[in-house]
Length: 156
Image (cartoon, rainbow, N blue to C red; front, side):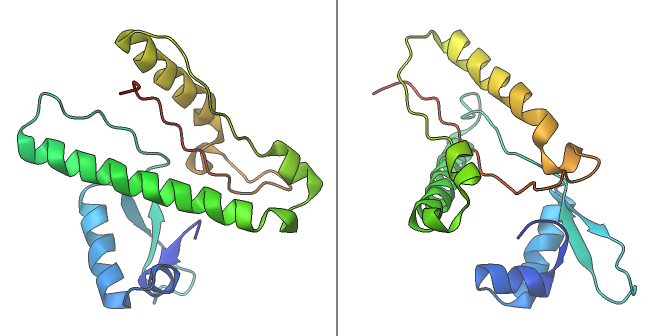
């Protein structure tokens, strides 16, 4: 789901109860991830994302609990990202040739220092920033939401 939505609409998307989604939306709002937006009729409570992407370090200076939570969150994001790509591949033939040609599958190996790997991540964020849905004044004709999941990790 993209754009603003009610807790009920979010619930239908993720298979949870509206009450559960309402609780989680309020919690996300408390931490600045979502915000309430005015509805057309003033009766329903609509929410929209305030964050277009998520990036955080491993918390190497943080306590063990934070590091463990960050590791779980990264694993969940990895799973979500892989599910989105898997769903695209499953339905790839339903997309136009232009969208299939535009789809990007890049896997490469680079030889870098830790500082260089960090710089690459920052450069990728800079390239994507103008295209974040929240930073665009209006949706260009023919635009669709596209998923980018970038992983740059040292090889074990």
